[in-house]
Length: 335
Image 1 (cartoon, one colour):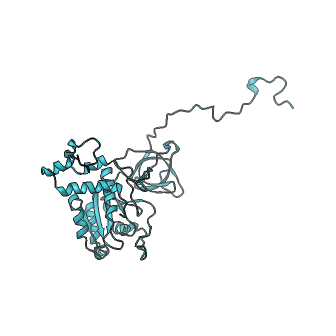
Image 2 (cartoon, one colour):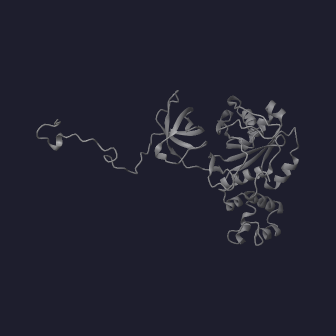
């Protein structure tokens, strides 16, 4: 049967458009100049909760971002429905440049980096003095990651009612890291939260620590209106149970700062760390590296730091602390 008559003309013939060829590809992407500015509060299975003008908006990453992902703490540009109403979904079209990136790897042999948080300026390393026992190697690794990312470290020692903090504080005294020591009674009456909050004012602080050290309990005391589930320490293994499964950014009361509660960690790989960046956290030692041989590990026979310290430019304990931190990349947390 003839479909187009006796003398069909080319203009009369319907042509099915080629979906791959009728629009030329281009690298030009829309600028989305009218996009709303948001802060990523948490990420859950591809859905990101963002704070936009005081509202929480659920969004997903736009395809045009490719493999670039957004993490807690990121400043992002969001388009679409920004009302925050139930069952609405916006779209993240741009991740703004980061001021800092706290990263870790699963272990020192794993080249795959995991971004923990973005744009934090302080890292609170929460450690229990007992139940579970403190792990100095894990503390050292967190310090190295903080120095590498350009974050100021803060030691928060919990459960001082079970053990003294003196020995642990003595081993980190040469680093000059600020610290807060708390116990369970102080968490109950609020005095511990108040002392920790003084160290957090005006800052975005990421909280990291081994499972069971009381990290989330402390965060709940700091932001009581946004309580998260807490767990307990296994009496047999001495390990805590993971109750925090995703990072969450929470504003401190009165808008005085931000805390980011992160899942408990049992390892903190440093495969991504460039040892040459760690020295920047030691301003009294850094000038002494000018005489070091190329690619000096700062723990070898020709290292110029030994002469720098012997000439009185820095304390020997500071050099010992630097070398101990740099050596953490060759030691596992349990060693």
